[in-house]
Image (cartoon, rainbow, N blue to C red; front, side, top):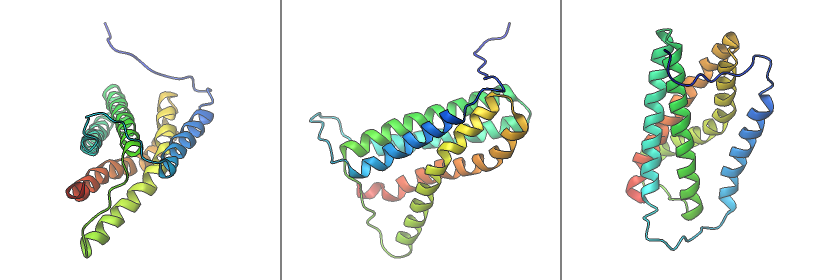
Length: 182
């Protein structure tokens, strides 16, 4: 008896509108946060815990992606899918936490100087640019995999996996570098 949920979409299903719609919506919401004034919740919850939570979610995403890569290299599609779904879950949780933090708190500036400031901003800028690009890449890769369009899935996954790994790792590095300034 096989347990678990098998999620698959029809090969001829047009998922591109979903990929475009979600990609645009997610990136527009994040950019819109730059223009939204800080919201004071009035609660006793320490909002400064959310960046740590974001780093934890990014860490789990990184580990899940490495496990998914390991599994697909071993041709274990079932566990590959499970780890990819886990990575999407922790990424979604990160996004919720990130959006919550940035609607309730102003951005924190990096306080370091010299070479470390240059390193920080290089990592941060590449992280931000690639994070915007990963949304459609990850969704397209996911949908192609679920539709069992294996050749197309492999072609785009060769780009998606290293970029997503970079983003999740640099998310943790950015947190570690800026955490003394919260």
